[in-house]
Length: 528
Image 1: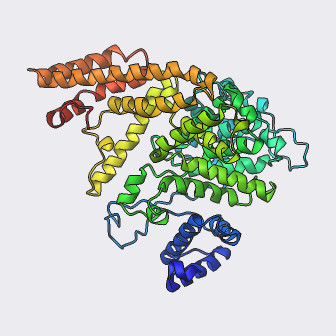
Image 2 (image 1 turned 45 degrees about the vertical axis):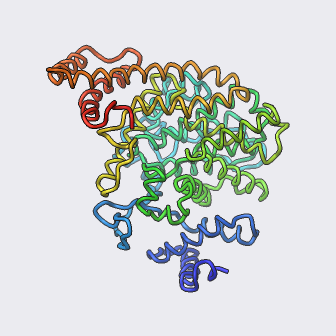
Image 3 (image 1 turned 90 degrees about the horizontal axis):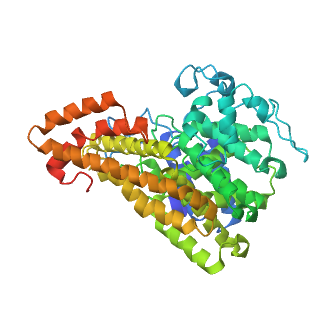
């Protein structure tokens, strides 16, 4: 069977690679490629045969994903067959736990005692089902007792306005995801009711957090923590949470935590255009999302991380299927289909999930996590404006890569032409508002709470857009360049916009030179 799909030669290489994986031996480049092709095929025929599902599970369990981005100075030219010796691993090698606290670099250096090791200090939860007790246990109150600011953030895990993921990242030494995900699992009682060994949960979350790339301006563990907390706030705000089973609640929290794990900082189109190994393995379909799901389950498969190992096999498969479906639905290419599918189901069965067909309940959970993923403009302005800048920093970094590779620069990634305010306004109007409008009947309390923030974000970005227009007009008027420079100096001396001080100040500085440059050859700066 393998020979028919892979060809006899490649099948032989794949079988040899599987044998070496079982022996924990490293693979060469040809063997890695053969296993990637095997995983790709098995994932597409999943569910057709229990034996094939078992083979896929075993293969993914043994094979740590190693999809790389091409390097501009090495083998990144489309069509090149040369392999780089220094490849960028999506799942980087992690530090030993006993060495993590001594690493003097990155966000984890010089942090308080609550974040001084590879994972947050253990928080005990009563467990009456005979599960192992964490060996580093202490109470949640004891963990935050010496840090009122940390305690405040832990208490705000379900509060939309009070929670500040940027502050939590500082307080935890760059590890906000562990605090948020574990806090929600505990707060919803899932650790005790499902008898989940907390030490393994912590180990899993520590590995997941380390697999997020901290150098990404946007797709990092702070984003994952923000999305997970958004989901927790949704569950707390409305009655639909009481209609979910424990396994469904567990699945949505896991999915939110791992939905972008190992994100390379570039989008699917970039991976396709550069013929990345991930694009080949996943046949150009939801490449990043497929990788995130597979990477998350690879980390879960490690013995010290597998907190689901005690679930009945049927329950584990149900959780796995749901998590995968949810993560794949975060692909923005599926946005409109997700909203339409949910709207049709809501119209047919109403807002009570207990009336929904079993296979359609996943549709609601998919849209909940997707809404959490795109909820930045629904945050209070002091947070949403920061997220808006961060996502465009990452877009522009991708544009720089595209330029270095000699590829056409994507419109939204072009530093000299793209308008951040216009992009944010378009995103709010055509993506965020339709999504939250669809959720209004299903989660009315939550949607009514975030709607004023969406309106505020829209007003803010319109003001920023007007500043761009004025800067462009001033640049073309007689003496405009000199006046623009003077205005810039006065703006920096006089302080920033009161609505979002730090961000608005940066916006005022960004608005002049790039906008004028765009206007010289592109008409109005926000039109692409």
